[in-house]
Structure formats: C-alpha cells, structure tokens
Length: 531
Image (cartoon, rainbow, N blue to C red; front, side):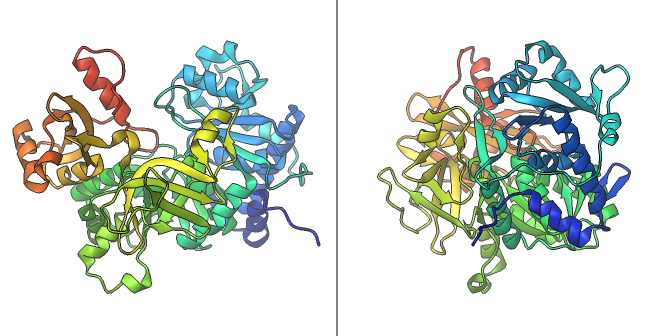
C-alpha cells in the first residue's frame, strides 16, 4: 500500500479539475479562470527551471496581493523549491539580511517596491536573477509580463515532493535582533488548510477578498484553502477602507480576513458613508482581542459575522477559533459577544493549553494566568539555521507562544497579553489588552495602545498612546479619570500621549516596541525598555 504525500500542488490540481472554467482570480481589471491560473503557474515553473531553480532552492517574493503573488506559491512548489514571501514594509537592510540568510536564488519583486531592493542589490550574495512584476522601461531587470509568456503552458514535470519537505520560509518581524525564518512543510500547510477550511466553513460559493497580505503566513493560508475549494480570489493591492468596501460591493465578497485595526477603520468609514452590503459576510480577525462592544458593533451595524481566531507563524498559523458552539447558544447576546472576543477553543488537530511556570494547566476560572502552549500538525519544523532559537521555542514537543492567557469555564482561551507586554504594577499583573479595551469605550478614542513605564513606587504603571477621532478633543486627565471609573485603580492609566497614528505592521498589528522606543527617546534615554 502506497501512502499519498500531502503536498500543496494538489490544491490547485483539484481546483483546475473541478472549477477549470470558473472565473477564479480578479486582479485590477484582469480576470483569470482556474485553468488560466494553472497555465500561468506552469509557465512560471518552466521559466524558473530555465533559470536554474532546483528542488530545495529558495525563491523570494516582494509583492502586494496580486495574481503574480498568488501564482508564485504553486509555481515555486512544483519545482520542490521553497517560497520566501517578504514583508512589504521592511527597510532595505532587512531585505539584505533575509535574502542572504535564506540564500534565495531568485527574487521576484513588484515595480512599486523595487526601490527597496536597489540600494542593496550589489550586496546580495546568492540572488542570481531579479524579475520585476509590472516592470517600467527604466528598470533594467527581467520583466515578468514579457518573460512569463516565453514559457510553455504544458503540464510541468514536478520534482519528487515529500510532505515533510519545506514549502515556505517565513521571516517573523524581529522586534529584537534579526528576524527568524520559520520553516513550514507541505504537511504543515496542507493539514492546517484542511482544519481551517472546516472551521471557517469555506465552500466553492465563497468570494474571498485578499486584505491580509499573502506574505503574512501566506495570508493565513488563503492561497491554499480557498483555492482547494474552488472559491474566487479578489486581489487588492492597496487596502483602504474605501477600496475594501468597494470590492465587497462589486464582487459580492463573502469572506475577508484582517487585523483588528483594519476592521476598526472600516467601522469608522461605515459610520460616515454607510455603504450598502447586501450579501452575508464573514470577517475573520486575529490579533489583540477586541472589546466585546467591538464584536457587537460589527455584527449589529455592519451585519457581518465576526469570527476571532488565534495563532502564530510558528504554528502555520491558526490554533484557536471563537465561534459559538451549540451548547452555548442559550447565552444572552452580550455574553456571546464576550465569548466571541476571546481567542477561542482548539481547532481540529490542535492541542492548546495554558500552563503555569511548572508546566501545569491553569484552573479554568478565567482568572489564573499562564503561558499558551500548543502542539499540532501545524507546528513548524524549526527556525532556519537557528537551532538554539528552535530549542527555546519548542520544548518537550510543545510550542511556547510567549502569549499569556486564561481559560474560562467553557474552555475558551483568552489572551491577556504578550509576555513582554504584561505590566507588573505593585506585584499585580495587568493586561495591557484589558486596559485598551476600557479606553476603546470612550467616544473620542479611535485607537489605543498601552505600554508599561517605570514608576518609583509601583515599579511599572500603564501608559496609553491614544489616537482621537476626527474633530474630537479630550484631555489627558479626562482619559485617566475615564479609565479609573472602569477599571481597578491599579490597572488605570497614569499617563496619556496623544498621537496622530500608531505604528503598525503591514497586516495592521500595533507595534508596541516602537512606542516603548519613542517613550525612551522623549525621556532622553538610550536603549529599549523591556518589561
């Protein structure tokens, strides 16, 4: 009996077989069926082989959400090569480190991002060819639009793929030191896709809008499980509230993944413009847990189903989902919103627990705090060329996430903070997420982020960075009083800095490390404050 390996090209094979003539990918004003996408993937594979790409070679992509990025996954996989998607919001020196550390052989880059590569081009040690999507006449590189049609659409003779081969190398944003390359295998991504498509109820009737960047853990596996089910892909190069709503209206989008900050911006846009969305929409959110009132607004005002999920790059990424299980449907809507705002319960194939310093599970009382650990088919092979960091992250078969959480009576995990973001004031642990949730209830607050700052008496106290809504004014004293009215006094903020915007990653996650750096810069200190 021969086992069939779980390899990712099968997903596009299935879509081409069953949905070949379906309009599958919409990018700018271009439309491609699954058959046409498959033809382009074959051309890409033939082209990369002609450039000397072999099994195990790394092929890097620096691109927004486009058809070229989507087809890259499958074109690279057919060769048995490794996809290295790059964050579009890094600096040239970051790309230099990642491209050299990964020993990437080919770099495909969007013309709009090419200027980020130019300054470091001569220092690239292993990149043999640079191919530019949408190349202009001034750029002296291979033009993708001209290069791709030179190659055959004939079925590509694939490399001998094993499910334990590395399929993607994803570099985590390094808040301290250099980024680490997370090695995910075909098996990791394949089984993650099977579990996630079940929990998110993905079908061939879905129209998926790519708001979350595809470099962000492959846009949460969207190139895999939406393709496998023959869903339609809407590629959005620049995600603004206006462009997101327009795409949802124009293409009858049914599902979209995004960070909480992006969803927050959609709520603000909706308040002013009130766009009409006629179809049912599921919005999948990962990141800092939103306040329950936020969930209620999404479901009542927008009329969208809110699904909170939790994961990290090192686990492919999703492990938890917050949908309401059948035995909890009797709970009032307010209590259901509270549950939906939590990270959730384990997805199929994931064993997720919250443990104390001794490795024992915390009591399921929603109060006792421990570290979230997981073991699953999605847990990474390890960090590329970094065995020390791998051993630190994966201990006794469990991936230690660095997230602190509680477990409620229903078994739902609530992330209270990152280890490094927990504020310890007078010996009491304070969740910066809880404090932020209270601040979001203020009618003048658009966005809020809370960090720890040193305090002579208490060791640390919470300090808020706040973005106000347009044409709203409020004083620092008013915000402090507001937080004291809603929180235990030791949890209330002791200071407020008003800013025009908060620093964010490309996926919309607030970067508190930059706020800490900014705080110390203003205090005339050097170095980064670590909680």
